[in-house]
Length: 75
Image (cartoon, rainbow, N blue to C red):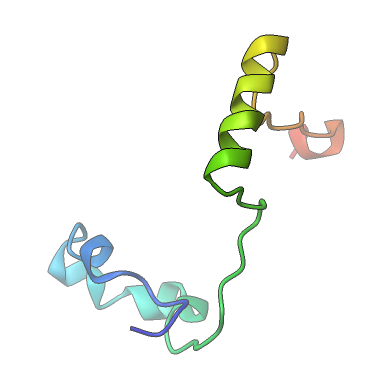
């Protein structure tokens, strides 16, 4: 399965009749062969555990979603 295409297990959760409509609704998901990149960097085991430990000690979340600008909320 080329990168960028929906996973077969994910497609199995959708009704058979609806699966045929997916390429028309989401043409960008089908027929693409590209390398997917992570949005956020990954850490190896040791660095990841240290990062979690540090955040727990400091009472900080590992990740938080920034609030939407007011222009986005008014749409």
